[in-house]
Length: 457
Image 1 (cartoon, rainbow, N blue to C red):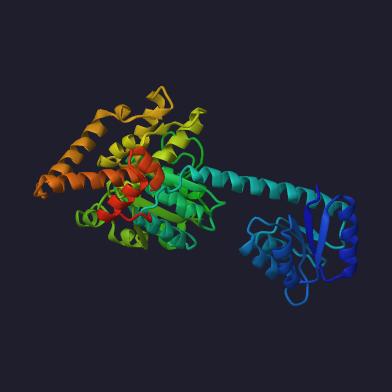
Image 2: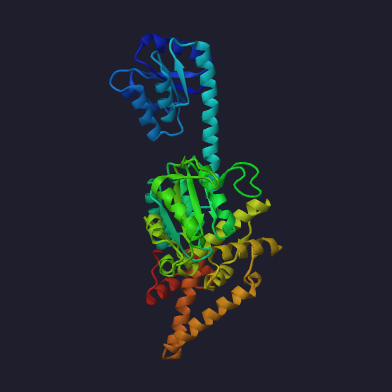
């Protein structure tokens, strides 16, 4: 067992009594006389649970609880008080306390509460770990400047409550941005609820978003909570919001303005605390001019705009994405991870990917399933992709060749590109590259210098 319990109380006899029973049960108790000492003790000891008195000098228990939860949101805290009231207990719970014990303390109740609190703490930690693992399958993969900048901006905005509008072509990963915003926000322990506005028929979308009361329409045999209800305290992701009707847009606008709504067929006003993240592949300013989208809703959503770049504008991320998907599909299928030859990856880099990352993911999944061996070769890349990439490369080479004026220049240009390609293939390791192309190491250095190739990559 040996879990650490921090006891915070200004009365020595309380600390002594709790020390005895906690040690007898195999716990490791540590102590603080007031809230300020408690904050320092939490930094040093990293306790598994805190027993926190409310009435103390210098810093009272409620203020201490609030500060603890700001920096350690998963920490389990049990409040203790000899002047307990329902109001104090409710306030403690709202601030994040697990339970409330009245003095004089029942030692039996203390032990039961500590055991249950530690069980809840373990579940919270396990859930947090599982949530992090699950998120890794949905994170934004890439090291190109445009993606690194997007990742930085997402983390900066995530800690706020600002509404976000994500734009980009189909398949670029707008949902991943929305999930990242939720994951890095203080709402991460609350629900992330997604709804595709384009996939739900017009007559049902209001019911899906706001819920309905029993008898609101034919088939409404019971009350149903909507997505905004389910997302209370968390984040709702309105995908393809450009396809939402003007009538529904008006209701979403009201939620953004007043944080209230009514269910379909109902009259009761329901308060909700939800962060709205929306996404679309449409040009919303153009939709506004065409009368298809409310201008006031656009400005409410567009507090922080993000644009996810198409894959063709970040081709250098393709090798990382390929590795990412190869790992995912190997784990999913329970197989050894397959490897893709650099020449095959180069074919993928040469393709324009009109379906963006989603199309690349589908292709890698197909290659993992259809490739019998452990290595994916250029021959196994679908002709629709390999042929397009090869055509693009031929076009590029033809254009480059027209700019050269002699056979010597053409030969030198080819040799320079060949050396760079082989260096990249071998991680810019000079010795391995020289051995692979059957050239003396010193000769390779000399050629790199003459062609202006920087060895310090």
